[in-house]
Amino acid sequence: MTKVIDPDLFLRSLFDRAVDAALPSGKIDLTPVEKPKGKVVVIAAGKAGASMAAEVEKQWPDKVSGIALTRYEHGLPLKKIRVIEAGHPVPDEQGESAAREILALAHSLTENDLLICLISGGGSALLSLPSDGIDFAEKKKINKALLKSGATISEINTVRKKLSAIKGGRLAVAAWPAKVMTYMISDVPQDDPSVIASGPTVPDTTSCAEALRILDGYQISVSQTLRAFLEAEKGAPPEASHPAFDPESLKMIATPQVSLQAAAQAAREHGIEPLILGDSIEGEARDVALVMAGIVRQIVDYDEPVKKPCVILSGGETTVTVSNDIGPLGRGGRNAEFLLAFCQAIGSEHPVYALAADTDGIDGTEDNAGAICRPDTIARAARLGLKTDEYLKQHNAYGFFQSLNDLIFTGPTRTNVNDFRAILILPE
Image (tube, rainbow, N blue to C red; front, side, top):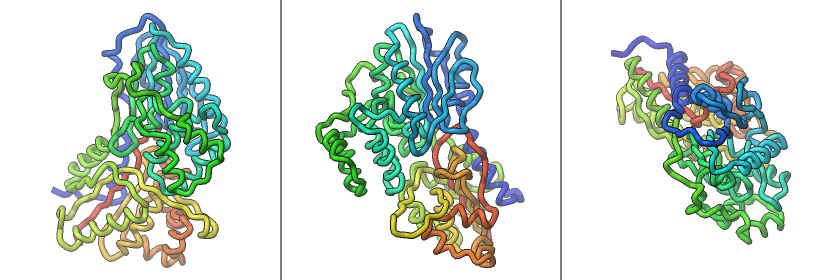
C-alpha cells in the first residue's frame, strides 16, 4: 500500500539511504588478516580515504601507522594515521608531495610487514606523482583537458596510469615483498578495480598506445617529450604476473549497485515500486537525460515497464563536454546538467519529480551534491526569466537551480559510489 509521501523528502531519503550503504563503517573486515611479524602500515587514497582509515583504526587491535590522502575538507581527526588533504579533481603540489611520501613508505617495507591499502574514487587526482621524465605542470594540464573533453572515467584513468609513478599497480610492486591487502569502494562502471583510483595495487592491462589514441581522439595536445615517452612505452605497466599482485587480497566493500538496492528497498518501504535501470550508465549528461525522459513518458502514458507510482533509480558517471567556443561558462556539475536537460525534456505536464546528486556530496567541482526538480520547475523558472536553453548552452545548471533554491547541499560524505539519480512518477 502506498503511503502518503512528500516527494522532496522521499527522494532525499532515497539518496541518504544510498549514501549510508556506501559508508565504510562496519564494512572493513580485518579479522581474517594475519598479524605480521613486522609493522602494519595503512595507505588510504580517495574521497573516502579518511573515513576508511578511521574504520581501520577502530578494527585493528595493535599498533598501526600510515597516511590517509584525501580531498580538501574531507579529512577526519585520526589518532594513528596521518591525514593529508590535497587537490581534486585537478591535482596540485600537495598531492604530488603526499604521493611521493606514500611511494617512499611502500619502498621501505619488508617481507615481514603488512600494507593495508584503502582505495576510493578521487584517488587518481590525489595520487598525482608523475613518472620520471614527465613534467607535473603538463600532467595537470592534460588532466584538466580530459575532464572537459567528455572522456569516460576509464579513458581518463588509462591516460593517468601511463603518466604515473604510483598508479597502475606500481604501489603494490613498490611494497613487494610485503603483504598487501586492498579494500576498495567502487565509483566506476562494472566495479573494475584497475580503474578505481587508477588501480595503484591492481595490474593494468591497458597500453601506452591506447593512452595516445585517447589523447589524440579527444584532440588533446601534448609535448613532443611526452609523446616520445608514450611511443617508447616508457609508461608501460608492471607485468600482471608480478608476485605483488594477488587477486585474493582485494576486497570490494561498497559499490554503486549495493547503494541502488538500498534505495530501492527504502522505496518499497513507502509502497513505491522501484525500477533500477543500471549502476553504470555513462554518456553525455544531457543525452542520458533525454533517454530517461523517454522512459518516463512511457510510464506516464502506458504504465510500462512499471506501473505508477514508481521511482526510477540509476547510477554511473555521465560526462559533460565543454567546448571553447560557447562564450562565458557558468557553474555546472554533471548531475545538475542532467537534471536541467531532463526538466526541459519532460516539461511540466505530469507529476514527475527528480533528484540527481553525487554520492560524495560534490557535483563536479561545486559545493552542492546535486539538485532536485519538480513539475513546476520550468514554470517557476519562466516567471524569473530563466531560459533553460541559455543555461544549458553555458553549462550553468548550478546557476539555474540556485536561482530556484533547488540545489542540494550535504557537505562531504567521505564516500563515493558515483552519481545517484531518482525519478519519482506519481499517478495523474
